[in-house]
Image 1 (cartoon, rainbow, N blue to C red):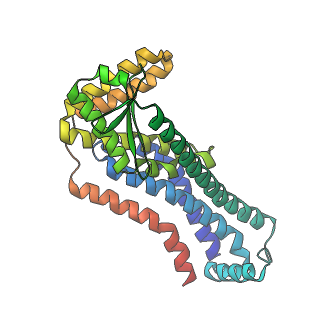
Image 2: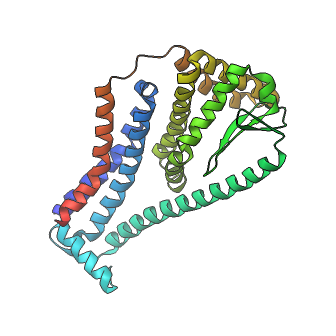
Image 3: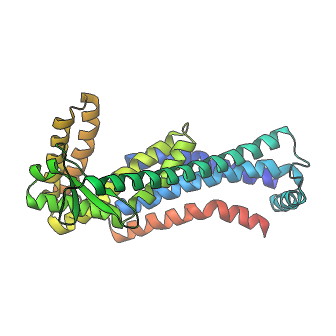
Length: 309
């Protein structure tokens, strides 16, 4: 009975973390005031959701093996070492165990595949950029292209790449702000921060919470880079560069109206945040967010670990 209660509790926690909590967090206005804290909370919500679901399924699978969960887990571990992990389980328990294994295996496989694919793609892109770059500008590589663009190629030796179209479009101060924005992505290893969100969204596509987490995390890392550039160049300079860059790329690329609308909403939100910033979140509130994030990460391991003691 105890094992069933623990399993129900973990699955209920997973349901909350996959349902109402991500929806509330995606609409939370405070995240724009503290993007780093919000990103930490998104990491905790998605990680704890996956751990809770896997832990709950595992608890369901081993429940028939003994009267209490800690004994069931010990029996399951011993049977696994003996090469007969399914002994004593019924069809429902085997399904729960297979589901847990599929979730863990799927996330691991997608994570590894995405990481390897990104490494290969960045290596190829860096090689091509090194071949076609025509000059350097303030440490960035310049590529001849009419469409204004700037991006970071992360890695052990990251590169910031800009197009000649961007150089023709922006004022010197705006260009410096854009370059600092891209360097912030490289220094912050933002590509690694986003990789787990991508893996969860790809491995579990039916769960809208993971897609929402990925979209929100991508927006938050852009805000972190905006904040870095704003600290050096001022919010209005960064906002002006964003607006001119978005307008220039839209005109050059001739993107359909629906796509332009989605891009414009993102730019408008970031520009509003830069030009009319809200009051910073008080330190005690940020500390509370970080404490809540740590508690979420610890919840499932603490339950399962306590059952083994």
